[in-house]
Amino acid sequence: MAFQPTQLFGGAITVDLPTSFSDVSSIRQVPDHQEVYLDRNGFTSIIFDITERVENVTTDEEALKFHFDDIVSGSAEGTQYFHSGTTTLAKMPNIPTYTLFATQHPHPPTISPNGASVPRKPTPDFTGILLLLVRLVEQKTDIVVTVNVPHVQGEYASEAVDLAAANLGPLMGGAVKVQEKFLETFDIKDWSLFVN
Image (cartoon, one colour):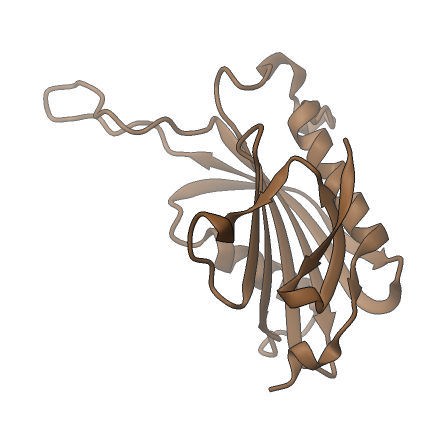
């Protein structure tokens, strides 16, 4: 997987992203507090979200869970958690940073009164979610980076994926490499981005 340096939020933040990912703002409107990138060769997306720091929690781990719940709320899908914990940004090792890996599973298709399945748009078997939370205490800001990896039938080898046994398969394995590259290259160049 090839990566290239990428400027986010007008160059205030830099990070290396896969060369196969494109800025979604070139095809649709994206809120000012977000940067969204989509894989041209698949369904994976990366969302960078600058939010107000969550203060109504007692630990940073609770803030991580709060942000995750906020992202998936209203999706009407089941969630399975696999891992969460602390990590380190190579260029900013003193900034509290946390990771979470979970999956979202769609509900079965709705059955109509006559017993037939109600047609729905194609849905993934599950979506793998890698979340990275960067907590900026002095700036009263949380930066949430989410890598969403939908696993759509026919687009991945289901026999290669057994998350309970830590067999991530190629799609989630690629997402892990993307997150590792974030941790290695993520850097804040212009702190005035966070001035209230």
